[in-house]
Length: 62
Image (tube, rainbow, N blue to C red; front, side):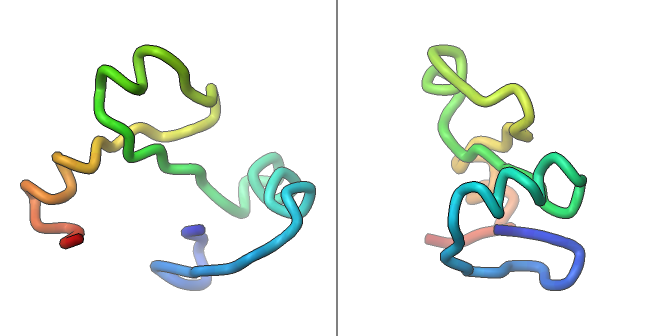
């Protein structure tokens, strides 16, 4: 999960806590599925950044 406190934050929390943070604007949901997967199904509140774009921009390296 990414929030304002840390660039990357790996936390395991109850889904209700995560939902509260999303609704309060304290967290953002980033969906890294590819465009064809995103077109099939996605969360309205999710920001879409395909993994291939992140790799190509060298923002994230698997």
